[in-house]
Length: 258
Image (cartoon, rainbow, N blue to C red; front, side, top):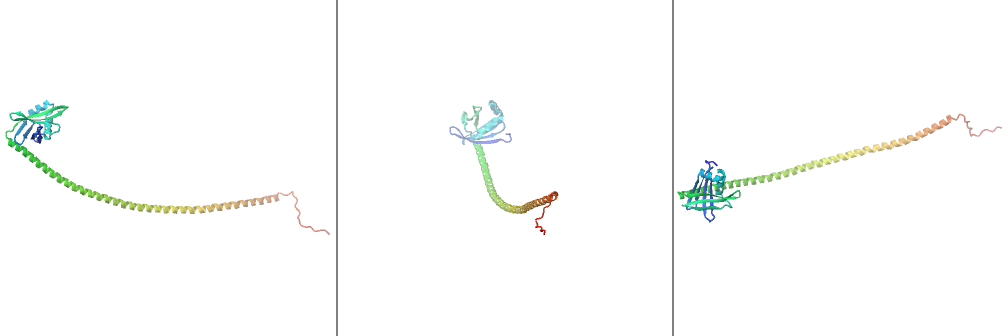
């Protein structure tokens, strides 16, 4: 936090005894200011750099961590912390709250003096609350309008998405139908080619069998002829080799001598 850009907080604080006060804080990098009102009276606390540094050193904290801790506990009422706003004499009040550090319960407290101009302090706190309320209302309206626009855009996107999804399904169905038609036509063509090839193979096999049968008959005929031929050759050989055998007489009846 830089001195040129302080942070502001305003807390409606409920004290343990049911007392309610408003605490406005202005937080710089090394010091802070507090403005407190109960609606009737008001108090202020101006913590200087020296005082903040001294308090931070007592708790072994850097100044920035000490400032951040105060901003946290006076920005929102923290559960588990005990807040107090007690009399400190001569019109002063002591603002305090508890917290734990490394298992040790500590108490953060500062003395607040009565405001020199109670009405102005109270008015400044109310003005800050009003401005914050207006700013928050504007932010709510802006975010609501932005949400409505996003809702409309989301509905448009959803409608467009559903339309695209439907078109995609229709396109895929049409493509699949065409693909199946082409595929079935190809299958039919392949079956026709297969049947045609099967018939051609069958017509080629039948003449081959007939040729084989005729070849068998020819071989049988040729074998018989060879035997006859060989038998004739044997007879010729017998005739040719019977030189020493007398010739046979004919069986014809001879003429009687007178």
